[in-house]
Image: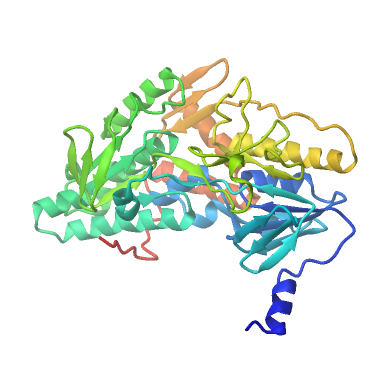
Amino acid sequence: MVSLHTIFFTLISMNIPQSNLPRVVIIGGGFAGINLAKTLANKNVQIVLIDKRNYHTFQPLLYQVSSAGLEPDSIAYPLRKIIKKHKNTFFRLAEVNNIDDETNEIDTSIGKISFDYLVIATGTKTNYFGNKTIETHGMPMKKVPQALNIRSLILQNFEQAAITNNKEARKALLNFVIVGGGPTGVELAGAIAELKNHILPRDYHDLIPSDMQIYLLEGSSRVLPTMSEHASKKAARFLTKLGVLVHCNTLVTEYDGKKVSTNLSLKLQSETLIWAAGVTGNPVKGLRTETLVDRANRYKVNVFNQVEGYTNIFALGDIALMETEAYPKGHPQVAQPAIQQGELLGKNLIKLIEGKPLKKFKYKDKGSMATVGRNKAVVDLKRYKFAGFFAWFVWMFVHLMALVGFRNRVIVFFNWCYNYINFDKAARLIIRPFKKFN
């Protein structure tokens, strides 16, 4: 039997003050969520930001945490610090379980809260395409803890290889398989190659660098399939020069923690398979099922980011599927669409409250880019495509400026300078050993 005390505690556990202002509840503190909160800051609305983590993650640099180039606090920023000067803005650390669209309430791990307007900005999660063996034994890289797990595993493999007399066992420890040739996979492959070329010879005198192999497996006909052919060719060439073994038209069919099987004759012995081959939407339970697109698991939204069938429930960023003439399959699941949608929705919500007409979302494509190790990157802009050192410099500047918080920019900049001058990666620490369960 539930006591009155339990019921009372559940009702007040979110501890959000009552207000005559319209309440906007934002689920998710990613690029879309924080930019919406910033746009609505100090306006005549009450904002409640909910996330199961108390920090924003700059996901484009997760691979540098995985490869010991940066510490996690360089790419993470406290959500409360972002909103600390925003009146009528509250953050709650909670996981959202369900949305009740009839009562306009959401149910969370710390209680329920009502809303006037709800914004879902929950992003994506790793998509294993139904392959349970990869889900069980592979290493995803969508979150800071997962990036730290990869870092620990790489360094633990080096340590174990140094004391292993069995050649086959050593080979498996030093074979690193990255699945997915998009920007994440390409950047991670380049970063691990730099560990092989610069760190292994200096730190592990009892290991032969040529024994370490990095494989990049891509299911389509070229790496960086969403970028131009120019970028793909340049990236493949850069990776090859770094010693990465690139295999296109290659799909992983099974991985048991020791052996990688593919659709081709290629079979690899490896203790480490890093999965960077795809994502799927991360929806919240409760809304009508027809609002979701089955394959993408994203909410169908109109040009105002309203979820199909609703006027007061919105979806932003990676979780939103806005089909337009220019983007019939929705916008790319990268930071810029999320940022731009968050900013526009903030302005549109004020217009909605004031009874003014809303402005349609139109994506301004600022280009795409990927780095492939030291002094190498590829950049696709609307009119120009270039690669090499200048592209690498542009990549660094754009990512540095996009980081949240001055402190993080300074730390990352000095880390990059140190790494560049010394050919070093300073974050080679096994703080939390990773244990594989095979």
